[in-house]
Length: 441
Image (tube, rainbow, N blue to C red; front, side, top):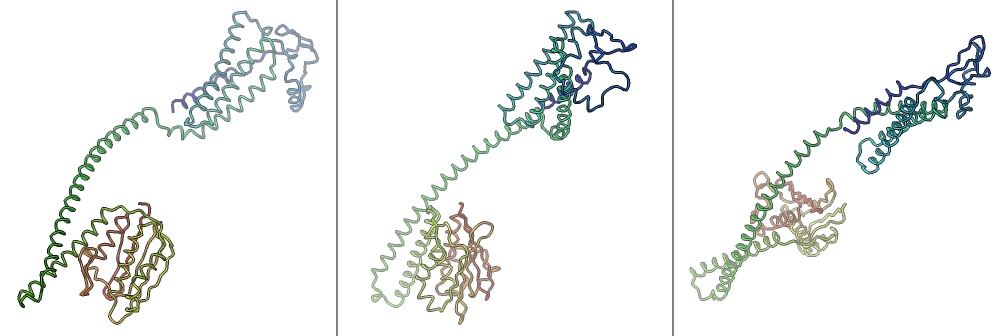
């Protein structure tokens, strides 16, 4: 910002200097009775005297100007124009040369700045200022030279070029003036840097508190995991021992009362082992990190259908497939489990005396792959059971094979990979499960 203000000030001062300096009229031709007059120590010959009305036209003047651009016969050197002392003349010459030298060095510095600093704002304007300063300096160089070589036509041409560059610089500077005014000052930048440093320090402090919190949480999780494993191991040992002991009892030796009690104990033991096995499966899903692989929906679904072939034939189920998205990046064992549970539930919870009709499809939604499963079964009352739909051992129908484990496993398998599952259902109108995969996670 400050650099651009300096350029603008330098430009304005130079324009004012050029206006005040102006081309100096060196030679005046005075005609008295059409006689030659000696002016500035040189004699103006009659060939260059013009009487009123005899001056050439504008076109002829332009042609003569460029034809004699380097011709100095019409003027004497400036040393012979007027009364110059050595001190006055050399003061003028040295001053012009110093100005020219400075004007020549300044663009070199600007060029170095532009080439070294690629982030300098408005580089084209800096190049334009460089051309402007060089052209201004050239006029001072010629002012010094005319003391010996009076090339006033060349000097006038250089001043014209300088004027054109000056006007272009003024117009360009005016166009970018709003952008220049919007540039932040050094004080503003320093304040922003100070504020940013304060924010970074606060973030670093919060980050340190967070890396400690995570460490503490990780330690607690590890302790909880160890406790879970120990508890699961011990309980499974006791449950296995109970099953082993019940297996050693000969039911024929028991009387009627003891037999009934023993059978209840056996049932509880079997259910305890089943529960422990389900919990073990869930823990493995939570803890394991399975490698994702590119899976084909059609191929995976066909594997599931081969396993469920007997159930499909017995129920006369119709399985419709429509895979707009052919593949997905997901653990293979999880995808098979998800499709297996969805299709088996669609068959299991069919309407009485109605053949199951299941549609499994894939498509893209918001850039993510979606697997949708729709059936025409008995449906679920979500207003009544929605909050506990995916809970462990939560059942919603009086079905002998309903255990409340399948949907719980599906949800855990999907969420363990960063995905999500939603459901839409009404009693008697079937159910639609929508699985959104997160392949980037």
